[in-house]
Length: 110
Length: 226
Image (cartoon, rainbow over all chains, first blue to last red; front, side):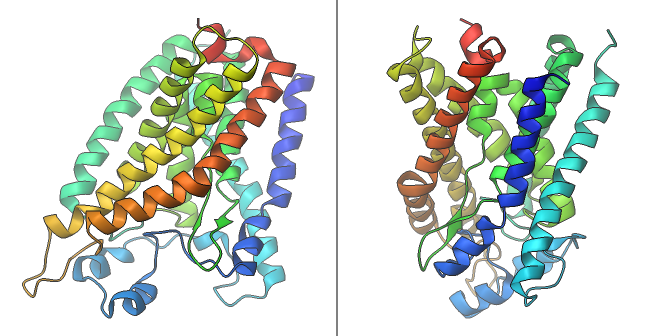
């Protein structure tokens, strides 16, 4: 690894450590989901009903770390912050692994 | 901008899977011929960066949230086809591991953020930059690249949302999938990206380009490719 690459990785780790800003700031400013990313219960409140097809497909997949959170929606802030950082680090690790595998399969050595 | 499961009808998400598949195939083929082992760490870092920058949700006070994607700067630094791979890997992992974006919508989300965005960003950068290799013109190009790429990507996403009521209604006249029509979805998503999230994306693009020009100018795909 070159010195420059090392610096970049350190920058990325710092980003992961700072990432909880991305949940704390919206909470402070009382901002909710991104437009069009509401869950079924939020839609129920917005529309008065949940669209039929949406209801059918919404839970087709259960993600292991849904919403970058480990403690459920009502988890204390400290747990959410920790889970967010862990998600960030884990995300980088999985991404690195997948890119490595793709590269091994596609790029000739040398 | 990550479309969840249930918001798109099969008539929409299947063709978008097809579209993304075409781009994935070409991108992987180019990866095989154009890139060598020394590019791999940068590809991994670019994907990691895109993943992390998306975690920084920016609030519209009392309203929705949004975030930068980083696909523009990745396209400038590594080329648009490499950006297709980097951002697609991110979006697929976000959907599978973190439930951010739907499984059925992976094709759509990759098309919007890993195809439309890097290519729009790249073209805007090249177009505005012209022959410039430094200075205000280059940074204007960088800003507009991120700003326009994210905003167009948001509008394309909004169109996918907005056509759902036209495609599928239940017998009682209620939409089956994403409920809001084009005239609501497009202005809502366009405005928040034009006024806030796009500006953040533009600034991120400038800052990173500046950093790379200072430290590793030979690496930058969109500059050396002249």
